[in-house]
Image (cartoon, rainbow, N blue to C red; front, top):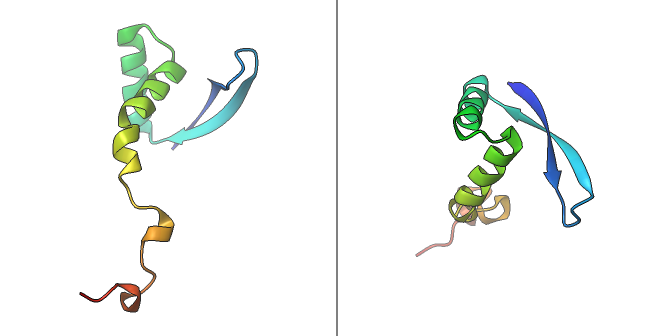
Amino acid sequence: MVRVCMEFPTMSTTDKRKQSLYFPESMLHDIKHESARLDRSLSWIVQRCVKIALPEIRKLPSVNDIPDSPEDVPKK
């Protein structure tokens, strides 16, 4: 895993906060490759990836939606 420190803009355009994100080396390589290809920052690439993937991510069940044991599964 490789740690990358990125700035993500918040609601205010002057308030920028840094956040460390950890990526597998191969994923970071892909992000850097696309960053160079599109002549954009790493942060921009990651933000676009999240924006594009968010509808699919929202389909994933939350931790609270997963039964703890087989007994918790509703019977049909």
